Image (cartoon, rainbow, N blue to C red):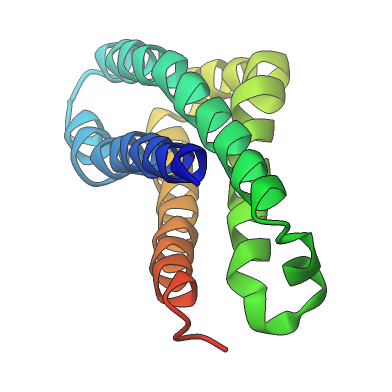
Length: 157
C-alpha cells in the first residue's frame, strides 16, 4: 500500500497548495487590491495575481483530482459514496468539481470577460463581488478539509 501512501501525500500537498493559495488570495491579496485608489491599477494587479496563481491552481486541482480518484479506486472505497456517514467525501468531490469548473471552464469562457466589463463600470462592486465569491469558496473548502480529516480518522460517522 506504499502507492496509496504516496498518493495520499501528493493529494494533501496538492490541497495545501490549492486551498492555501485561495486563502492567500482571499484574505490578503484581494483586501490589499481593494484598498488601491486607482481602479485601473486595482484591476491590473488583481489580474496579474489571479493569472499567476490560476495557472498553479490548475496543476494542484488536477493533481488533487487524480490522486483522490486513485486513492478511492485502490482502497475500493466507492461504496462510501452510498453511505451518508461519508458526506465529507461528497463534499470533497463537490469542492473539487466547483474549482475545476471555475478554473477550466468558467474563467476562460466568461468570468474573465465579465470581470473586465464590471471593473470598467463598477470597480468597487466588481472587487466586492469577487471577494464575496472567494470567501464563500474558501469557507466551504475549509469546512470540507476539516470534515475530511475528522472523517478519515473515523470521527464523523
